[in-house]
Image (cartoon, rainbow, N blue to C red; front, side, top):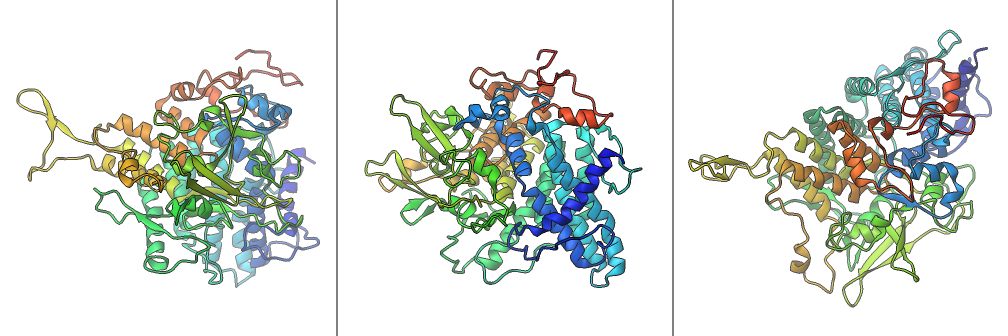
Length: 616
């Protein structure tokens, strides 16, 4: 029998077998089956439900989440060596841009496992509907929309990691269908993903029934219309369809604002979840944006505690995978974050530190001239980083608190600066921090980026040439100065995300801190581009976004300059020299198994030890 078919068939059956694990958020409450054969499956609605849950479970795997981090974050200017990193050969080489076809992180099996199971569900769902009248046609369409998102999200990761990859949307269920698959252009795949999601988004559920016994957002652990719109905004941003990207992002923002008005505005929110506030730029005429403020009482870090701490699943979340271990081996642990970012309860004895740490430029105390955190009043530096200063030198090492800590409190010292940090961790043997794919501020900054690129003018303040040949502000018929509305809104979005993280120390007055706020005066399109990507770096640090953000800019510009200028060569390593070098090589075993897959010319050939015969 064809070995590739054996592999794919085992992937399908594994989707059923994996249901014996209780995980994937709180909606998973299904008793395990001792044995299910493929022949007597696919008969009723609960079979489809279990297979869908199996997809989420696959995405919770260590292999899947690790690659979200390794592909989306590790090669960026956010990341440096953590504890015992040199013992992890593949991570160590990745940090030095020494990417080999034998590197375990070139394996894409975890993602194609998800993809094939989604394809199978999409293909088999209609026949189950014919057998089980409880499983209606609208249920079929909703299921297909849900797993289309999960499949297309997986493809999006593959394209950003490898560029051109094998692409198929059919279920492989026989030897005849299982064969070598040639790669498809990454740009073509992105275009097809957009079309696919546009067809199904209206069939997805806007929201799942609320659990009135819970004070948190239980609608972010499964795919909703907002999750699909967030992915569409992301895809369109990559594809250069900027107006579409802005429009899809607005749908997510509108849904969140509506949810806020219905469930939070003017109401008392459970103290375990903190309070929300509407942030709005003074010159804005819109409704503003509902976000968690960084301050709560005399302490800062309220936004971190709601989004990343406690149970996760915050109001701001759009789609995240939930891990609830309850100290039980029968539940899936988020071991990927535990090993890479570190915590105080991982099983490998790494002393509570991860193999990855913040790059030294990030770890430095933020000063006014900082290239990362633009001033020392940014709460994200203190909340998102656990900084350890060396007693023997001025150097510091910082580890991520995201996906590690349960809560943080940041307070001003008696002298005003520096700020004190107090972290709370859970002493146990299991890591249960949720992994967030999309949240509200991420989408807001996507929209800002799209508006910057689609703006009519190159400057926020529109100018014209007067009779003397000098440039003067352009005025409308009423004598008011004209501003580019897209750039104006883009700045409003960036300002809002930044403003909610600014601390006003109890020892300093508001006006002293206010001077660090953003100002729109004199901003050009180019300046706003830099402001937006810098704000995304601060807001989404360690969330698997930074490398992809930098890559998207290089993709837009058609050159590698932005990454070359921003990513330092780490510990004697290399920096990418051309566009092809921004993507990973194909895995050596995949090259052997797929006769239509050829290694990229940039990486050449490698021997059994992974040493390339051609030099970079």
